[in-house]
Image (cartoon, rainbow, N blue to C red; front, side):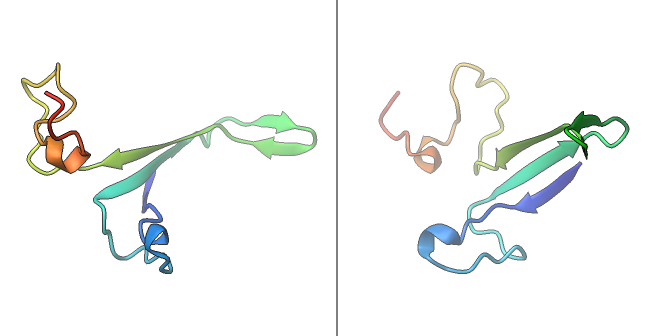
Length: 80
């Protein structure tokens, strides 16, 4: 497992700074190191990546029917 900052400075036209997080989102990665498969003569491992975002004031508990209890952060204001 690993975690890294996403390229959150790129939309503003700035150079990515992995030491500073602007959007409270990171990329998590899981890679299997115990097994590999062959692609031609190259050894490859299976990997999965996903974007994990923190939403301010959104616990998620008791809110299973709604994506967030903080719709203004997600840009969903007025959709309920």
